Image (tube, rainbow, N blue to C red; front, top):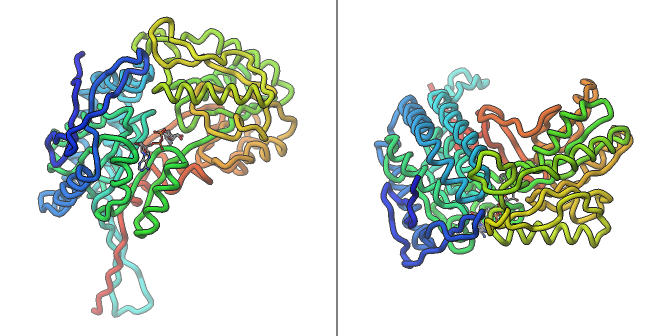
Amino acid sequence: MTHPTRYEHHIGGTAVPPSGGEYFTSTNPATGKALYEAARGNAADVDRAVAAARAAFDDPRWRDLSQTRRGHLLRRLGDLIGEHADELAEMESLDNGKLLREMRGQMAALPEYYHYYAGLADKIQGDVIPTSDRRVLNYTQREPLGVVGAITPWNSPLTLTTSKLAPALCAGNTVVVKPSEYTSATVLRLAQLVDEAGFPPGAINVVTGYGVEAGQPLVDHRGLAKISFTGSTATGARIAASAASRFIGTTLELGGKSPNIIFDDANVANAAMGVVAGIFAAAGQTCIAGSRVFAQRGVYDELLERVTDRARTIRVGDPLLSDTELGPLAFADQRDKVAGYVDLGRSEGATVLTGGRPTDGGGLGGYFYEPTVLTGVDNSMRVVREEIFGPVAAIMPFDTEDEVAVLANDTDYGLAAGIWTSNLSRAHRLADRLEAGTIWVNTYRAMSPMSPRQGFKNSGVGIEHGVESMKEYTRLKSVWINT
Ligand code: NAD
């Protein structure tokens, strides 16, 4: 499959060159070689995109479209994405280095997101409120907000953009997306499919470029009614401050340092597989990575051995090959950041049981890092407290349920947690006690567009997926009529 080597912004339904005339290079992380150039956006490009989105929002073709018809458009978009799943999977794998077979799985699941919100579009409604005065009719209606700014990271560009775009369009908004500068291609292709599905030009606009040059002007733009962001906690804090100064809403999906807890009574073989998938999938570059592993004393040695043995045999290499199990980090700085954390762990006294070195992926030349297992660590160390966003598991023993609840909650983050046990009462008790927005019991990573998810603590604000997410893209109006 051949893919474009130069991309422009997507504004008002057309490809628009950057107003500054400049482009930046995106590289293939598996080889370190240039993949394509994309428009280097600036404040003027953002202005143009927000104006196009506002024009589309006010356009009667969108504003007056029935909710049923909005649902039809979303359904068509989901179908189109399904038809282009192979193309999108390959583009995204080349762009961020994730395994092609994993991206095929993600792309096969993507239509479901649009189909789910397609089904919800005609169910957005208000209520009639029985106030104490029977001569007055009071009703509510749910309205779209206006232009939504969406800023997304590089680890799952299409899925994470979809988590914003599908509910925002479902509720009748229009959107300006600023994808990560490391992965612009698939979001631009998605914008073409949105237009092709029949949404009016300007319903989706994409401005590519760097965070400071294109993201910040979007965040600060006075034409936005809401900002929806997925990325690091540090950037999220800046965005929250900007939005608060204008009293506009935010949905923020941020970082994580999730615990994966294995009890003596667990099926240890299954738990070990869950730990491996929890931390080594996508080379650890997932917000929900189970990076802090707590194993109860009775199974600690067995779990460690199983996870370490598996980590040693993981096939690291070309993400396009079907038997590769671990691809590269998405860019050189990310690989260096991971290496820096492991070195820091060593200096803090950690033992590296396996891994702990950058590699070139068997001569490919890209930004690979070995699957790594650390022991001799505890909650006082930065490798256990900070998000590494790489294939690095920190494995620690514990004795009691009470102890592990305290240890697992002793973190600034609260995105997800895994519990492995055959004791159902314990699973319920701990699920209740853990401070995380998603809890998995005897599984890890399960996700659905129907199931709402929220980051607790420094992991986020607001909800994505499910009916609740659609509501985050609406405002509620209360109408009183004196009858
Ligand atoms: P990042 O915060 O560096 O960048 C995310 C996006 O923000 C990019 O598009 C970037 O260009 C933009 N950006 C950067 N500075 C900006 C600024 N000042 N103003 C506006 N936009 C700006 O994050 P990243 O490194 O791309 O992504 C990795 C992070 O994302 C990790 O912390 C990970 O946990 C998090 N993440 C969270 C979820 C979730 O659902 N909670 C999902 C995936 C990733």
